Image (cartoon, rainbow, N blue to C red; front, top):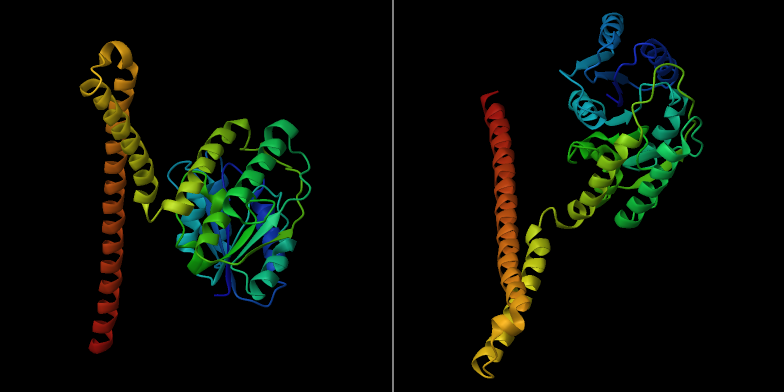
Length: 321
């Protein structure tokens, strides 16, 4: 299979049929094998029923239904699990993305890029305060922290190599930051300008309420990029700094007490409390780093064990055949 198009839907009953028709018209003009994976993210309207009707008449369509509304990231992850194409193209289901831009993404993939991001240069209908300003701030911060020089991390119109996307952690609002995570795996990333239309039906599911979770994840990204496989380097550094400062302060207080006879409680009571807090906090951070290292080691051991089991199973099947 050449490529898979994954589209998540949430209460988009008025857009589903037209979205399918547009995608179908665009991709049938391309001489490549394709499939469509439509994910119903717990819609409460007739979105799923319409998707089932489409799948009943088009064998290239796979419909995935989630039990409740998990959000776009989990909906995309479910779609990726059912994708069989060498490449995966993701789009939003609200008719704002133009399927006629799909060839632009395939051209960049053919040039050797692993991730192609759609750049929404013009955003008609978006509120300046609720959407544009938070988006620009988040994109600027993400580009600075990740070193990936693209303008639009949060857009849903993207193309990926399937073997890459299945390696990346997806939860929370992490789908916005996949390019930054992919860069850590050595992926080649670029972006292409895309056309964006105003929403015709329904209401937007994004607003100021989504800004806070996005910025929480934005704070998580630097840790994931630098310390995911070595948590002791982060917690251990802070722990050693706290522990060392506390011990030095305690040593000075000890000299003051036993050499110069200073009454520590009367003269340096706050410093005594500070030194104790630094020592205890430093030990706790070191313990957290050690536990993190043990968890990472356990994860990698399990991963290697599963991989070896798969290889052994394949060998046995070959011998048996």
